[in-house]
Length: 462
Ligand code: B12
Ligand code: SF4
Image (cartoon, rainbow, N blue to C red; front, side):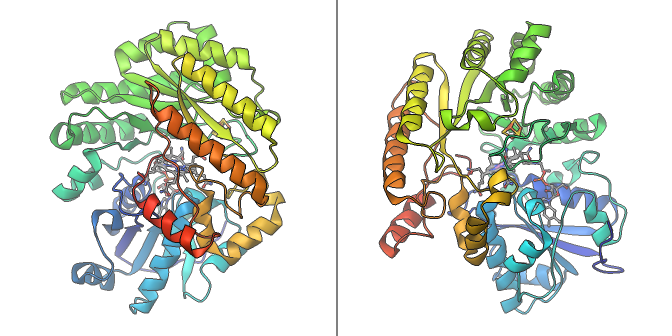
């Protein structure tokens, strides 16, 4: 694909990680760190500005960095960040920074170019980074792929306060991208073989991360979330990745507990081939939690990989028997679901509680950039593009809102049931990591104010 190059000879690239949509929540920004690492190898000087660390665009130091940059990048991981990226682009233009702006990140890859243009119209030269490979072509340099580069040297150069903020709590380990399945409701990069990182690049980054935990981790007790979407889809590659990470942790004298997502089906297949796999990963590689997608009854037919409740239950048992905490990631109440479907979902939740499975229930969202609804529900997409702040309400932790669940009666019932379920789960022995958000955009002014106050108290990873 041909892309109009941004600059012939530029040297400085300021990369902005927007603040979390509901307040400041520092979280290791893998996307911008990866871009910085790739650019640095091509001789481009990068500077990272993270609003979650209190870097305000108006501050004099930040203004100076921006003024001296030839190009500005904004990272946008998922839908709730879209309004933040727009706010930043507007603020930059208002402050008189007219350099080209490049917007990238997982969710940005899902927009058609004309949809992207609508989001950033009248803001001058704002470009979409449509895929990982396109970045080098846009920048007019040869860049290594995101899989072949270690972000270790970029992380090393971060100021101490940033390292303390990122490693003093939960962070994400970039292990692989992509998934071979194509579930209709999912907005991830899918329908392709999972791609893992180059072993040497990953080893270098793992060593840096383990050193950071040894220096700045507070107890290191948080589970680190691996980016792999299905940890048992390619077990050999996952095992190699986990082993490299374990070796790095051992070298730096730390234990870093890991968590990843997996499908029940791939876990069952992997266990059939190698019954000791989970026990080994737990005992030798510090895998402490596996989250399995166990969606509500309404979603069964949208799953391309057929699975049965029995298989799911057997997998949860096997995970628990290996000493690993099983987690059920559930989507409840898609707009079309009747109360019977919601009731069945709740029954499933209570089975999980009794079986020692930690449950993470979320509210189903029919339209997410890149999922099936994005291509079929044109009216909703149109409303989102017309009122981009409503992208915040696509967060799966957010209660149903008029944009996601237009039927008011159903929405009120679903929200009440969902909220009560999460709160009830919180007092069970395993608790519930989900922290519900309130809708703040397509609702009336008093609810909006209440929602903003409530959401500020919610963590980034819910
Ligand atoms: C870690 C992670 C998180 C972390 C975020 C950490 C962070 N700030 O970076 C946490 C747990 C907080 C999180 C939260 C959410 N996440 Co999340 N998350 C992931 C996960 C597992 C890994 C992402 C990662 O670190 N990848 C590694 C980096 C290197 O890759 P990358 O981010 O894609 O970056 C590359 C390119 O995108 C691009 N790029 C990135 N930034 C930039 C910037 C510029 C300027 C340019 C040019 C390029 C560029 O270059 C990078 C490579 O060099 C992915 C799943 C996956 N495997 O992708 C889901 C995923 C991205 N998350 C997703 C979602 C939906 C969410 C939530 C909205 C979930 C929710 N609650 O509803 C929230 C949003 C929270 C919020 N406040 O907005 C979806 C996005 C789907 C979509 N189409 O939007 C994914 C794909 C999961 C899924 N199965 O659907 N998430
Ligand atoms: S929901 Fe999970 S298994 Fe399905 S396509 Fe998305 S990442 Fe893959």
